[in-house]
Image (tube, rainbow, N blue to C red; front, side):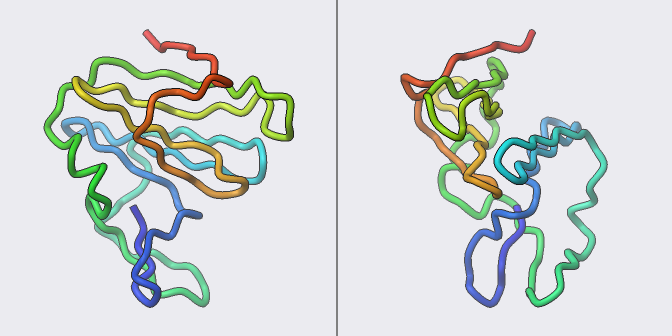
Amino acid sequence: MVWDRQDDEWFCDCPVLFDFEGEQVEINHHKFDDLSLTWNTIDPSGPVRWTGFDLQWRSEPLPGLQAVRGLSLNGVELLEWTGRDLAQGNADVSFVFETSRVTVFNALDENGLSFASPDQHQRSHPLH
């Protein structure tokens, strides 16, 4: 994840990267309904250039992410928001591990992270 060194916090406008034994999945939400999924295109050992910010890549900066390190991945789901609001139809990416899950969701023009089970307004679409 990209860390804002000045504010000492996650810079959630940049992609979130997950490394699965050398296969890097890159997730980024933009605007209210844009989702980008890419593989192995970002070099987290390089600098982060964003005018006006002092940013750097950090591995596992949040405790919830440290908790899933080394766990087996049991599945991947797209979680479709079914609520009757502006977010209707948005897709979040959820990784299901042995004992927990991590979801990267659209936090209205930036990325958000959740470690909770899907909401009642989310329809799961498992990827096989």
